[in-house]
Image (cartoon, rainbow, N blue to C red; front, side):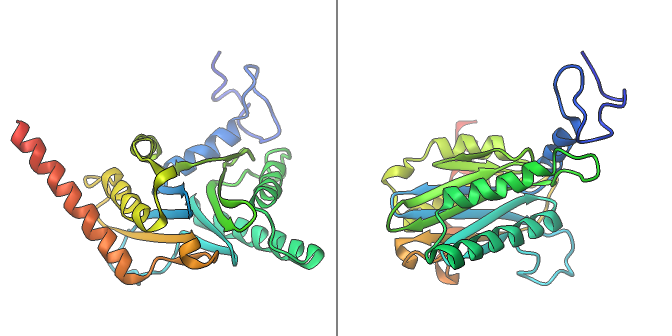
Length: 255
């Protein structure tokens, strides 16, 4: 039964006869039109990678970041509408700050993901508001729970993952992530693989240039979420480009 164009997509609070909420599906479409972001959890931390498309040569390098600091121990990578993502990052920061004020220690990531997911879900219930047009990945590392990774989508669902991808090339990225033995890898090893995956899934034809953003949180950073240092990032990008060239050469040889 098709309900498109019959008025069931005018409000986020209306179900179609076949049980769908079209406004939420459209919000997910906005995420799928965005650049790819991935997060992978390993034995000693979490690594984020984001393909930030450069739409104009006039942009300043490093502006409009898609990786945010939420708390000292929590990082966030986003795909979708950047303005929506920034407002959700602010909500997440407030939740983390309130938890520390009330309980005197860092918020566990599961609590933070659930609280922000409830906030996102509330925006799918009322006709006066629209759903958020972004998905985001949260990652943290602490002594009690070790490394943790959660993903929240525009419907307000949050799941825990070992590795996940959001954005236009999420399916291709998931296929690459599944090939990794991330449970046996360290952050230092994984950062190269994350860079390689972003380079593999980047569409050279449609999107010419992009900036690779990398961050990590884990034992290597003493539990703090930080951007990957410049020298390690350059090393990872070189590894990614070399791997792609090797694959292209082997493909040509096979032909």
